[in-house]
Image 1 (tube, helix red, strand yellow):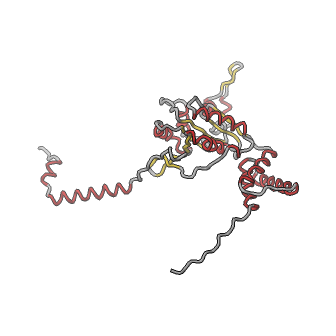
Image 2 (image 1 turned 180 degrees about the vertical axis):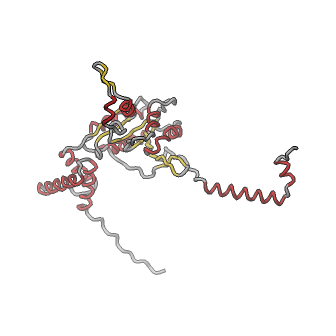
Length: 318
């Protein structure tokens, strides 16, 4: 027995029923369109200096940063050597020459992220752009690279405060994009990452038991090799160190006028100022550029002239 085809069934369906079916399908399509995430326009990097990779619901897209945090490298104290190294690498990159992916590691608050932002401020006019990618979205790195591969600008993919917990497999995507994927590296993209850990992955004492001695050579176990191999894929390591007391006070003094504060004038004022700055650092448990900036913000807020109040204006009744 031959079954009727769907076309035959529709052919014998009354016109009124066909209209109702078409209306129902149109309503379903409209409802689905309302539920779908709005279409996102790709950032125009001729107008925008930076973007973020956003993941909201089922949508994954680049979103332009409209208010970019400007940092001048000359504002940063105690990191002259580190600045020279990252600046040299970045200049090579924007000139179209060979350059390395960069891992900036070391003490918190010492200027790692600020130096990356300073490179954007310094070289944006020469075509440098920055895309911020959160650690949770590292698996999307190949998709991000594909989206910007044909763009004429030079891009730094910036991963801030990068580290991985035990069992976190997202670092494998980073390993592949750095060096190890079948896809060729895109010449207009570098990765700059900051971390408080040199090896990015947690290290445990028991892993040392895997180390073997073969003659005079030391062979690390697979666990250690796996953790070291990730950071080794960054061609350039730049280390940052805790500030000495003199470096910390130098940073405090340099930030105050930049933030609009009144620098201490007399020796007595300077002594009180530095005592307050050291007490501030003692309470925070750290001497760093970030803590120096935070103290300077507080000091500038307390000592700066109050802005003039706007004069009240009379309004005529309407």
